[in-house]
Length: 92
Image (tube, rainbow, N blue to C red):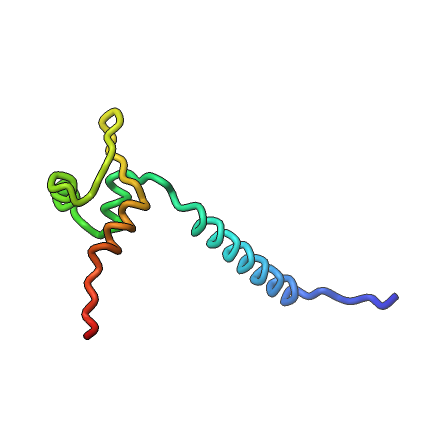
């Protein structure tokens, strides 16, 4: 039976391939398991808005929310739906 020698370059290449595979798996899992409800800080980051703007979206009824024990939650699907409904198409 022939013997093969594994070099440090082979191990380094294997490590990079393995890390890339793990990264791809993590992205697939993370993308498919999006959180159902988001807290205010997460919504501000998602929409890139200030706390005041988020409060205005709640007050004027643009963004529905639920409040449980002083914590405000937003439904992720509702946020995506509202964004889609308010989409402006500039193509003529």
